[in-house]
Length: 322
Image (cartoon, rainbow, N blue to C red; front, side, top):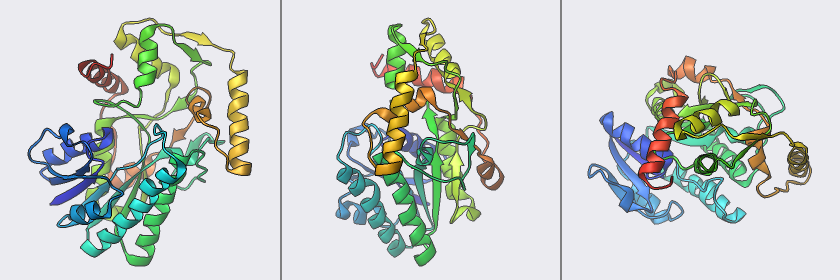
């Protein structure tokens, strides 16, 4: 079977491509960074996901599509650029998938679509309230694809991924570098909880979305079975960097006020305060119920967070980030 992976040289896409090749799939990727492709087995389509000619070329002769390409929360792009990449390109890709009669279209969304949660645990049926342009456009992409499923029969699966850790991941680079300096201060107690998952487990969850026949038309939370505290995560990073645990900054009130104001502006006026959402990591919890993925996909994470942190730090060192 030949599969198309958009965003095939990103953190998730690169690891997914490796996993699919090991499983015997033929893999085609859309990428703007062909120099990152080291495996000659991979067929490359060089270009941008917003270029319709690139999509036309890429979808041809593929039986499945894993759509990962997106502007992420780290991008400094304009709201229109987010919309063009994360929504309009997704819409066109869905059109071409229908024409090509693909067997499965797996869309990687984000657990961030829930925004700042007021409840202790969320599942696939929980209300969404995305509070950043990235999260809003990922949810909009979900809605586009589900409409294609409902109205035109596109065999869609939505995978909402939690935060991931592992080889070649740069999503925790800022935090890791700060801890390495030994000048970083942990904002708050660090006892807030969230789900973290090894990248190897995350891409296996995506593969199961593609392989389990009954997944079509469903949304799944792909994350660790149990949450961890921020303190536990920071401790693992510090230990594997061989540095002391960071000092705590318990003077959190200004940041809590900023986060509250940000949420009020978002809910009342749909205004986003730049960078305010970054304090969510230190001051809020988001706990996921992954029971549906376990029951319907047979998805149970196999790797520990410690293994993920070790692999992340080693790859950051190998690539001269640390």
